[in-house]
Length: 116
Image 1: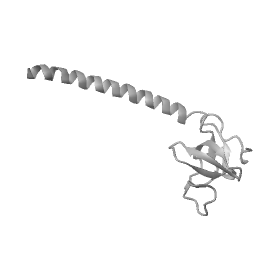
Image 2 (image 1 turned 135 degrees about the vertical axis):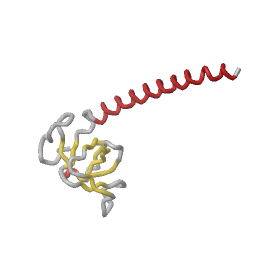
Image 3 (image 1 turned 90 degrees about the vertical axis):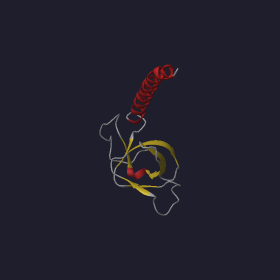
Image 4 (image 1 turned 180 degrees about the vertical axis):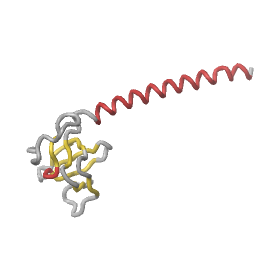
């Protein structure tokens, strides 16, 4: 009876490994298409102030390095936009620090601030 239980253990362990591998593979491919795709089409021109609560804060919570890719989430209408980094960090940045990036990893399309 003890041998009967052991004979199923490696099979279950193998099935779990295969399922986990498939799940992680699909997750990886879906992430790369989102992160590397057209969604993140803004890039910071310089060291950019990043505000988590909103543009009304006096001091930025942190700074984004030059070349950080961002996804536009919305506009405040006050010279700031709400963005998300490729790492999922959401906050507000001044539009004057941003430029649109060509599809995928192309060069920035202009050195002027976006016109939105």
